[in-house]
Length: 141
Image (cartoon, rainbow, N blue to C red; front, side):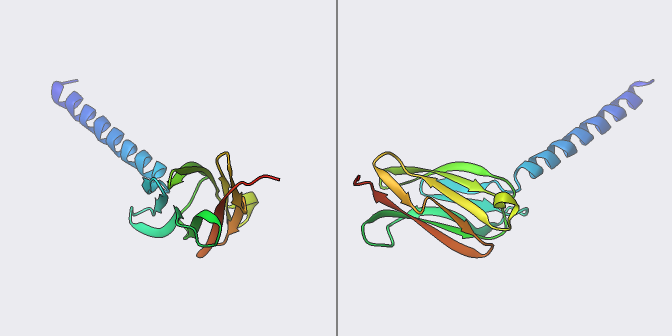
């Protein structure tokens, strides 16, 4: 084989490898966070555009709560995921369960830190719907 032929084959192999890498990166970013910044977690669509789908921990929406977690569900999820959210020094663990038990809804489960309680602890949220969980100080029994 001459050098020109070998160089041509190598260029073709490199082109195929670049294409495969690009496809793999695209596959793993289907529902990657567009923004995971302290008190908010957002998803992106295949196009990378921001959507209305997010989980945010923010100011309490009911009396006695110290924070409220809101989940806006807008069809951009494709896998279970765990992440944390922090508001006013309170950090909670969040488990997002994609199509919970084969259902069309997603389940969001919140684990409050010691000294706090999430009410309810988990919610099922239909597509294009909103669900909320409130965080309260645990007073004890």
